[in-house]
Image (cartoon, rainbow, N blue to C red):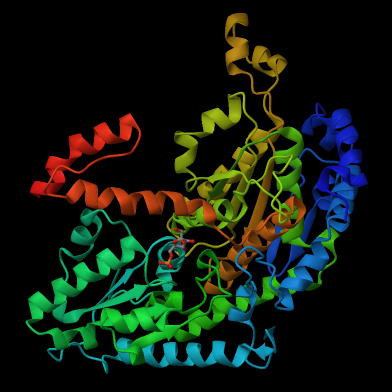
Length: 542
Ligand code: F6P
């Protein structure tokens, strides 16, 4: 296969980019009355309008050709076949198996993994029902009313995001808390008002060795044992979600109370594995099943739909277009739904840990940019903070707008105003306001440049009927497969994360230096040495 820059599609895209880079969306819409229809697709219950992008039919044709020349379909099929496409860790990448129906067969190294997936789902459902019904009790015989998930990264961000997104479906008479940060404040504040006799801790960690999670887990165990006065309380108040049975046992959690997942599930792709136990406890097994159904519907769409109407592929190709041709560095994700307030944070790990890579699968330095900075906040709040820069700043920031036809909280005209706002933002970004229009409003000449909007700011409009568990599954899988598409084109390993290792190793070296009673011999750079010296007395004495 030719390298990315040698593909004929890439070269044609460069020529094409030079020809259309200054074409304005105003012109593209004026010249094509059917543009909104031409560049919109409805699939798996989502309306995906990408007409406000700086593309023509030729752009799309070339991007689709690029996907073909880069072997996106082949790589996708290899993933679904369970091949070890995570080459640097020599692992299959099969989060799609987590949401496969009971009768499906997905093979990893010669074994169908679907029965094991459903066996764990069944155990999770049984456990959830026992907690939710009060049949499972704490050490003193009280029912569990509070659930605290302890995890970080993929073992936290998915569970938090899903809990917030699906609040209308959650047990309102129970507390759900999430502790991730090694900053003791996180644990202290999350547990401040909880009764240890009614609290269940879920220790979620793929490896069960992560510093933050294990530190918080030990603190949680002390908190529980001290309050309940007996080590035996751990059995009633702790369960684990992990791939590492040995470490779970060592920590002192009965491995009967462990929910398993597998090395072919990446941390950031794990929210629908047993890592979703807190989600299932909150929304119940049936709604959890509906969420998996949404994931699976998008998986099937990605696997089977022709690329020209394949939502994740289109989304991924647009990301390539802006990153590699327009030089855009960030993508703003703006959900117009308060329940999706943690969705951008969730996407940051999914997208940036996946595609923040500087070498190809073969280990050669890439000759093009990869990854983008994903960020965002719910609308309409963002409009009153960072939107100014998107509208009138000097940078190009493509936006993903996410909205739903129906709200869970129909209050007066709130929802109409919310939808009016998202439509208005997309329109204003695309079409702007010309100096002539500003002048015609009676503005003095000196104010005209300040009040003009260039427009030509691209956005995608993703519209669903309402934010149900199924819809959430579809949305997450849409982004997962868009990330996949981008990674396949960039020829990088989207499923490893070596970049997080160096900081972890250095922290392990610095922690004993900070905590040592005797003055340690320091061999860092002069800045780090000085900071360690300055901070030592605070950490040693506390
Ligand atoms: O440090 C990054 C990372 O390895 C993520 O990829 C992962 O989601 C997170 O840490 C937590 O890891 P674990 O689930 O093994 O505790």
